[in-house]
Each structure stands twice: as C-alpha cells, then as structure tokens.
Length: 427
Image (cartoon, rainbow, N blue to C red; front, side, top):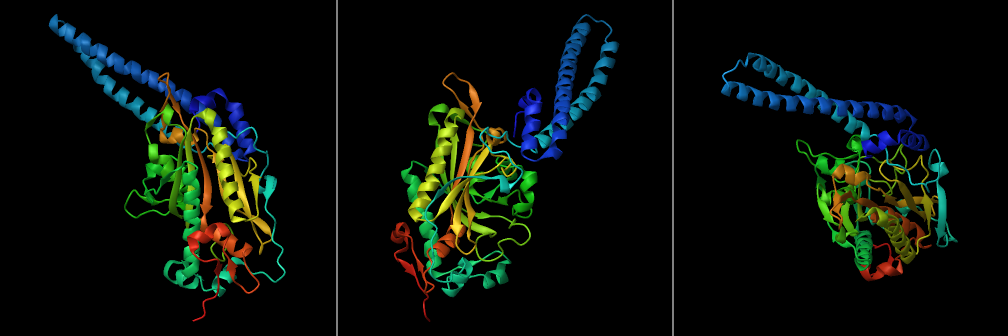
C-alpha cells in the first residue's frame, strides 16, 4: 500500500494515477483519507496530552498527600480522565482502521513508462520473438490433441472435483515435470535460491502481498482455520521476511518458488472453459526478488530476460506486451506480460507476467533493510512467472503437433522426458 504521508503531500498526483488506472470511483477516497489522517493526528495529540495530564495529576496527588493537603479536586479530575481517554482511544482506533482499509483500496503509483489507456485494447506490444508455425494440415486445439492421445481426462476430474479440474496422464505427466525441472535448473544456474513454500498461508501473510478484500472471493479457505490455499508462490515468497529487517549486503535476494497454485476465479463469461488453459489448480515456478530501490530496474530487466530465454529455448513463438494503465493490477507499478502463440486460436495468450511492485508489498508486510548508515528502508519486491506449466503444456501441444496427431517434444525438454515424441498408445 502507499504511505499515507505520501498521499497527503501528493494528493493530485494520486488522483491523476487513479484517473489513468480508470478507477474514478476511488478519487473521493483521497480527500477522505487526508481528513481522517489529520483527525487521527489531532486525536493522538489530545490522547497523549490527557495521558500526560493523568501522570502529572498522580504526581500532584502524591505530593499533596505528603503535605497533608486537600486532594479532593485532584481526585475528581483524575476520575474523569479514564472515560475521556477511553473515548479518544476508541476514536483513534476507528480512524486508524478506516485509514488502513482505504489505503488498501488505493493502487500503486504507475511507473512513468506505463502506456496510458483504459483497458487491454490499449496495451503496447514491445517485441515479438519466434516464427509462427505454418501447418500444412488441419490443426487441433490442445484439448482435442490431449484427449486423442489419452494423456488427459477432464470428464472424470469433473465427476470427482467439478469443472476446471483435470487428470494428467502418462506422457503428459512426464512433460509437466520436465517443464518444472527445466525451469528449476535454469533459474538455479542464474543464482536463484530454490524454495518450495507452504501451500497454506494465514490471512496476515496473504494480506502482505495483495489486498485481501479484493481477492477473497478467488482464494480457497480452510474451514474453521486461519489458513488459505496459495493462489501463487508469490504470496508465500513475499511473506518469507514478514516483519523482518534484512541486512543491506544481502540484497538482492532472488527466490525461485515451486508450487501448485489454487484459484477459484476462472475467467468471465465462460471464457476458456475447454482444456487446461484456465483451471482451478496448476503448477508454477515463480521468480521473486527482494532488492534496494536503486536495484529494481536492473532486476526487473533480469527477470524479463529470464522469461525470454526460457521460451526461446522451448522454441515457442511469443511476444512481450506492456500493460497499459487501465490493465495494470493494483499492486504493481508496471507489468510486462509474456504472451505465447496458440495456433488453434490464431492469437497470443498470456503465459506469465513480470512486475515491479516497488515498496507497495513490503509496506504491507513490514519488510525493511538496514543500511550501512544504520538507517532502515523498505525493500522493493519484484516477481515474474518462469513457467506456469498447464498453460505451457497447452501451448507446446498446439505448436508441436504433427499431422498424425502426435506431439514432438521440444529438444531442450527431451533429457527430462526421456522420449522425443508423444504418440497414441494402442491398447
């Protein structure tokens, strides 16, 4: 979240940011926040004065007692103070809660390079890489390919778990783990610390990464417990240093989180209902970095370059798209999506996002670093998908399909799969 002091000092900048993000309904919150903040400062000052006055009166009563003087007026005054103090404390707490709630609704300040636009139609394609395949036969989508090869079962998964779940079978299981191991090995060589995080997080931990209220409907909750299934390893990695102070010399810290992800949300209006492109459960290797503010731009480019290299090695056609102001999430200051080519749809689809979240998450999570001058500053956090395997699997099936319905395995994955092609196994 943003610093309330920053909002108070730069109200017009924050309002312009909301206009650019197409969140006009939140502009009124800025004036409300400033009023509540000023009232909280005033209330805190009055509270401190009353507490100080209570201490002074106590000392005066003790002094009067020693001098055998009348203390009735002082006793009367001090008896009135607790109710006044309690009232101010309650008022102060109410103001603080209101401020925090509203702050969580205010998005991060956009990077100056973010293209201004209302929605995804205003996103800016900045690079295209790879040659779009030219098939000389009638192609199939990933669902039809996988069902034909008997490496996917959606109907039985729906029977036991509901819509948007799946059984991966046989060679598709091997290919899934090949993608995971490929990404893990790649990032390990780049100096990332491999992390397999908890798959369940407390509300406090999740709230350090996202606005919990905004995402509550998309998260699976464990009944009668303060635990939620993670929607991405990003949230668990962000909370690794929850309420901690990091030494400046340790930064940047680079994590590669390997985990399943669980999400209720599955797209609007029945979008992507077929196959495994948009599902409630998927596997992912996530890049996550803690760094100093002055390191952030270099680390962002490093993360983005990693994704480019991964998909170049997979020989999947892709493009990089700079999200416009109206399509950028509340937490990042900027996001560049990696979108891969899906032949059956004849368009690019998102496979991952690279984001600089500045100090927005670290302020919510209370994560600082200690400088050589003994100062404490908030760290910057950045994240980027290395591989979200279910979408990557769908993309590989479509781009590597053959005329006979078989699937070639990308050369870089063959050492992990131990086979070069997925063929129909005749029973």
